[in-house]
Amino acid sequence: MRTHAMQGKINIGCLLLSVLLISGVYVGFKFGTVYISKYMFNRNLYELAGDVAKDYDSKRYPNNMDVVNAVITEADKTSIVLTPEDIRILRRDNQLVIIEVTWEGEVVLPNYIHYFTFEFDAKRNVVY
Image 1: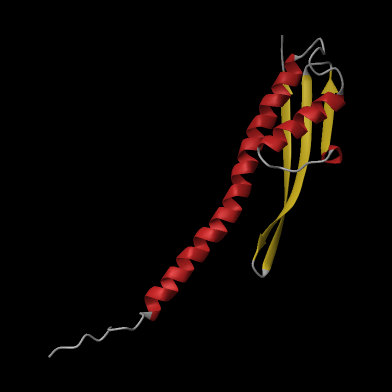
Image 2 (image 1 turned 90 degrees about the vertical axis):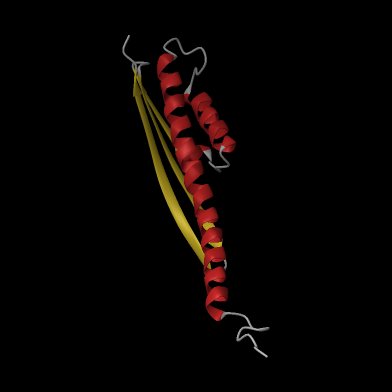
C-alpha cells in the first residue's frame, strides 16, 4: 500500500505565499485608493481652474470663497477631506487662475501608519 507524503499536512511554502499575497493585496488596496483619489482630484481641480478662468464676468464664481467651496465640493466627491485653510486662490486680470491645495492624511495599517502630503497646483490662463 502506498501512502502520500502530504497526507493531512499543510505545505509551509504555500501558506507563506498565500499570506504574502493576501497582505500585498491589502496594502495595495489601502495605498491604491489614496493615489486614485489623488489622480481624480488633480484632474477635477485642473478643470475647475479652467472654469474659474473662463468666468471673466464673475457670475458663477464672484469671489474666492465661492471657488474654495467648489474645490471642497470636488474633494468630497473623491473622499478627500479638506478645510478652507488648505486652499489658496490667486486671480489676476480675471484670466489667470492659480489654485493651490495641500492634502494631508494617513494610511492606517496594522502596526504602521503612513503619513502623506500631496500638493496640487492648477494654473489656467485663458486668452480671449
